Length: 190
Image (cartoon, rainbow, N blue to C red; front, side):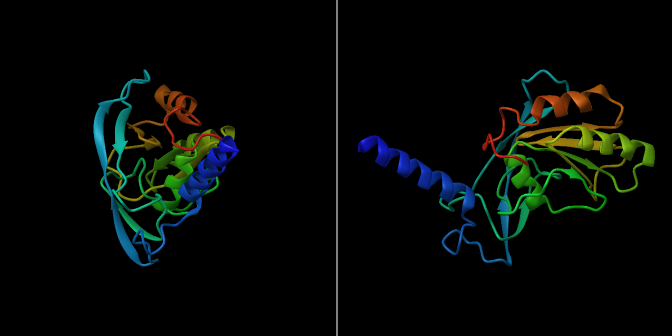
């Protein structure tokens, strides 16, 4: 009987962690603004030059990571933290998408390719093909990227900024991090 009780308790905790929006006890109100900082750790150790690693912080005592409202991230585009309860389906988007929804997809193992809205159409096509050819890639334009940046590839707690979509590290990042070991909810599809 004890193993069954332990299994049921673990299942309840898992479901509460993924399905709860935080409620009033956690501060979620639908029109609130939350902060979700990340801490830079330096170069990631997975072997792709330029990939930066981050520690994702959840505010202590605030329950599950889902929030209904806007979230201020210390890094743009963000690589993890508090996020919306609703994830985005992977694929290519012509319009900007909410960081809060994308982060839920990153939590499930997606890779996010954020590119400047004024990126040349030939370069956008390279990104579109990566999203089409990889089931766990989400691509969308992103306002406010630094001048000269062609794409920012993000996964949970990892990020690579590139000045060319033809840089071979872009495809390497996608291959290494979609459904990689770094995200907190393995086995959940994008």
